[in-house]
Length: 297
Length: 120
Image (tube, rainbow over all chains, first blue to last red; front, side):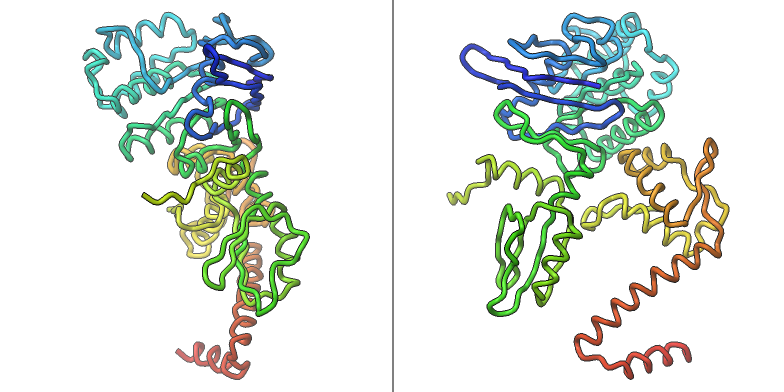
């Protein structure tokens, strides 16, 4: 269980985190999303115990993270910008980690050599960006972490490797119940792997739910109403758009209830579909004044 | 064996459910056969194990599969399965028939079509 309560972090005068709350249940795969500059990487660095908050409290299983080796030992963190010792190869880093992380699993490490066709002796700074990411996963998964914190994990990886990495993580989750927190802009991918989602904006948590709950509480309705007819009143409409005669609505509520109300207005045609994570992201942030502007160059 | 289609707007757990149901109906899995473990399927499809668990749980409630703790999930007795599938398909049939009649196809035409299908 990862908990952050009312976290405030300032860099000089800039407020990066403005009273952020975050809760990751044990065993969850939690997707952290938000526009650029929302503070995702900043909160992740706090959770990993790298930054120290100005105020608020961060705990993992009830213990504070900052300067707490016993918590950090159970956690693997893959940052967005990967950093290793100068001149160190993957093998050198493995030796180093093996001395620090008590769960480091040599058998796993050796087994995964097949997956990642990487030169273990070559200095890591000479590897390409994608290869460095692969190396980071190789090492992180070998640590057998209870908590895995990933900042833009598959950024820079080719499609085969992306899937390979997700498949390794999902296998590990199914086997060990690893708690995973992952930030990404690839919502399509997050939708497959996450069961919880937190949407951040401007240093705050905009909403935090289980994905199931999120998708079952907002629906997209496409309908064509007869002349003079229209959407019945009393529905919580978040967004409306029209394409010819077809009206599209984003409506808050349970799909069965909405369907009953709409069917009662006898539309010529209607369809109720669940929203994709990408649509939820756009509409929820649209409500928070972050939307796609009709801007023509 | 199970394909997830990202253009399909049904949730993933439903795609897994219908994938398995189709597989069973087509004879790819027979009653008593063991289903892939949650872990195997999660690794193979690179999706959240909880999603697969949810699909399995619903399949179990609907009588398609049964889970034996510690051993895995198995395809349920065929009779039960055929019965369930029959009901589900009849509901679909009724929906299609209702829509066809809505656009002016007469009952007679539908009956002729059904009987014609039998002769082939």
